[in-house]
Image (cartoon, rainbow, N blue to C red; front, side, top):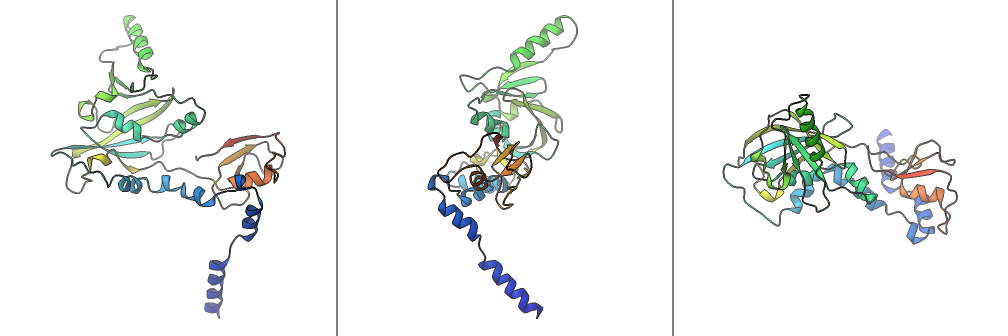
Length: 282
């Protein structure tokens, strides 16, 4: 008896579909329809970045030199002390290769606002390694060094050994560092991450032998993604504040539920006495 009921329930689950949502989506204008498959595939960026990088680099191969050094580097989020991104980098690579691989939501938000700042630096053992590749880049360390030397002239601090260097011409083998010590990565003005070199060793045969795949992302940020408050099915892409038609404030929406609730069938906004923001992750 119970086996038969269980089998019927599993069959019903496989055959069920969200017919009401599908019909509503077909009735809406094509410009306002929601591509659910595209939204769900966006999660692959956080779930399997290492697999994506490995597949993308299989066509080109550059053999790693003998007696190459590998460093294990961790970059922690600026607002929390949770587990951050873990990279394996080659000692012969420049510091800019690591900076280009670091993911931070601040970069994405600044690009969306058309206010992206290409400047940044690593501060390692009193040396500011600045990224000056872009013509519009700013030397963030310049006012800091001037302040330190001014304070040093008064005997208030010791600026000995503090200097600036070019990130693009400095390799990891050129660094002086201590394993396990916390250093600083700063970008977008004042977005700071804790950077730590956890280990250093020689490469062996079990490591990835393609030099083009390094820096190798071993562990991405663990991000928290909210589901839509209305349907509780799809990932939220917008958040509203002080919305009179929302069940709560702030309220999270997927693209489909947001447009169904706030727009008419001809694409006209029904009311605008609320605030809406794009939502990415936490």
